[in-house]
Amino acid sequence: MIKEFFIGTEISPAYYGELLDFIYRYYLIPGEFTDIRKEGLKIAFRALRNDGVIYGELIGGGDLKLILDYPGNLEEWAHSIYEDIFTSIQVFEDVLRQHTIYFAWVEGEDIIPEKPPTRRGMASRGIFGSSMLLVYVLFFGVNIILFVILGFYAVIAILLMQLGIILLSDRIYARMGEWVLTKDNPSVHIVQFQLPEDEFRFFIKTMGEDAVVRIKREIYGASLANKRPPTCDDARNVLERHGFRCNPLYERSRTVNLYRIVERAASAFGIPVPKVVLANTMIANAAATGPGPGRGLVLVTTGLVVQLTDDEILAVIGHEMGHLVGRDPIILFSIVSAEFILRLTVLLPVVIISPILYIIVAMGVIFFVAKFFEARADLLSAMTLGKPEVLARALRKIGYQKLALEKRGSQRITGWTAWDPHPPIYFRINRLENLRDYRNIKSPLLQSAGDVIRGLKEAILNMFS
Image 1 (cartoon, rainbow, N blue to C red):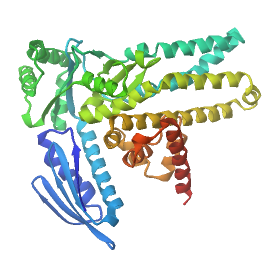
Image 2: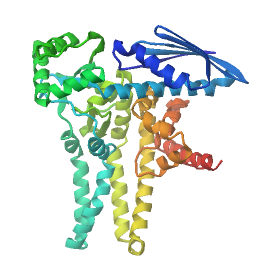
Image 3: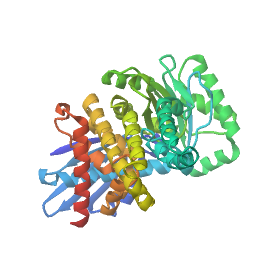
Image 4: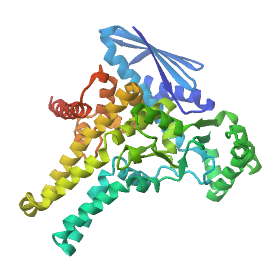
């Protein structure tokens, strides 16, 4: 059988050949491949085993094309080759991002510099990564203080505070973003220069943050102020006025109608269009919250818009819509509140005897149950938008590092037991890629809970097999 894979990339023309060289040098040559032939923007190779041969061809470009010709009994191996090449592309792009200059705008909004993906930023965004569950966990310390001060009345005060957080969650999320997208100003405009490392260091050294803001303002004045999207030519001309020359082969520009993407997802789910907020950080992330579908908010980062195609962004937004439709923020608030009440009543003797052990077990259970709702959001995106494979591809792109770690059995178990509301990414991708008859599922939550429990059991069995 012959399969063709098209893998979208975010690289500029100057790096088409370098990407193929990277795959050739770090994957094909060290791997179990023979007859490797590289010519221009094409690489042909062969993978040989006792039970058959896989013939492959890579064709470079904006979208890398992978062609695999293999017998049916080698389906699993062929898919493994695709996964490895996909991961190699993500590694190359990640390196390239370290010396890429990004400019992003939303028409009518303030002009601000892009925030690089720092560890502190990743941690803070992670706190708000799923239904504000970790915010509730942070209330443990506050709970203790209030309980000491107010006694029994602390229970009521704490529950009211937690309820207030969930009712105001859309406003809390809104403060994390810099730009609001609307029907009148629906698009994110991005220009990027993927420079060689030495040119990038020179740019950073000679141009401070203030200069970057001035450059962005001048590009805006030459384009969006005249009611047209910014282009690489606009950016190049402005940079040259500031004494910096760019090779056109290092440039990429893109306009993404993010509001329209969210609107399409909302229409498919049959809910009002939530407020759309963009955080101008290069960390790839998205989140949704709100007390209900009628007062929802979707937060997206510039990094996600840069890394994913429009279809992949739609699939990720579909996952977030699944949280809104399922009223997951309210449900998770109820679960955490129930645990809090039980902790101070029925389970109080256990807490007194071993408070640390109790917290470990209680939080482990809460986060494991939260995985049911994350899995349901994946399923609802697939059922409603009809593209589970696109969501799987998006997860591969933004989670490739975790996916590589989870190839080890011990890491898979850690993913299941960690205080993280998301199931391991390998499980989410495999589940999406193997979904069958998903439109006929009667109870997405029960189906997802069963899948999560089976996933944990399989991980435990595989670790000891």
